[in-house]
Image (tube, rainbow, N blue to C red):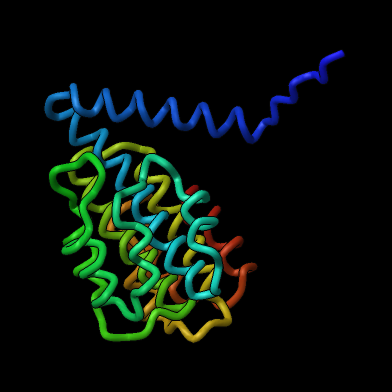
Amino acid sequence: MKEPFLLHTTTIVEKCTLKLVDEYKHMLTQATEPLSTFLAFIIYGHMIDNVVLIVTGTLHERDVQELSEKCHHLGMFDSIATLVVAQNMRELYRLVLVDGSFFFLPETPLAPYFSECITSEDLDDMNIEIMRNTLYKAYLEDFYRFCQADLLVFEADRRAVIITINSIGTELTREGRRKLYSNFGLLYPYGPEELAICEDTDQVINYIPSYVLS
């Protein structure tokens, strides 16, 4: 008697994701403006996440193949494995944007996004997190200028709260925290000033409802 074939949920997710990426790439190649730009913008967020995942994992000596498997397929590009040799922001910029070739996009806005955070500082946990939030700030503001959607407003506010909570008790200064907030959203323009001075999660929790509902 044959053993029953076990179809694991992880396999289903993997195959469905690959199918989604194939269909998405096909749709993007067939799309015209402004849809093509909108579809491309959705990909850039995944690209940023993949870069940060690889760099962070490498910092903690994780296996490159394991890290690559955890990357989102929609944000993959050919030279992502080369990021493991980057020691600072300048090297990362060169590897991603000069030597790198994104998998099906003739151009990418990641170059100007990275230019916002190019320094000679080493890639440690704090600088990588600052890089992630700086990239997302530039990316969301660019996306918002193209398409002022409510979802982008929500994402800007959500990231402002996350940045605040994650930076409490760290070496990140109030001014450094303020620079990472997006320049739009329901909390903007006064909300970021208040969040920048929050010293614990209770202050954040108490502040948000009163501000949004006012």
